[in-house]
Image (spheres, rainbow, N blue to C red):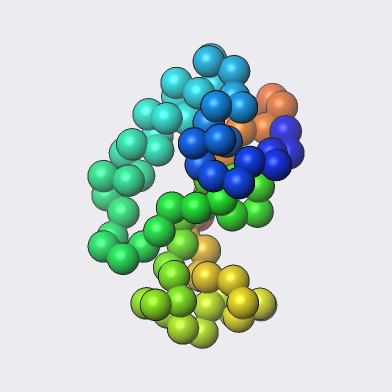
Length: 84
């Protein structure tokens, strides 16, 4: 499922309840352990966790305009995924 959500809350609201509950649970664990200064945001149509330019000015090495991606959490048609 490709999301057009602009915020993480919008993304979660788009999900069916059977997906929203586990995704929210994993999100809570991530946020509780996310290093200080790192950010949660929409990143490549998923919930992304990034090292912002304020901490890593060079950004993502393939495209310095993007922050350095740490991990993503997403819901697809047949599965939910956490990638790092």
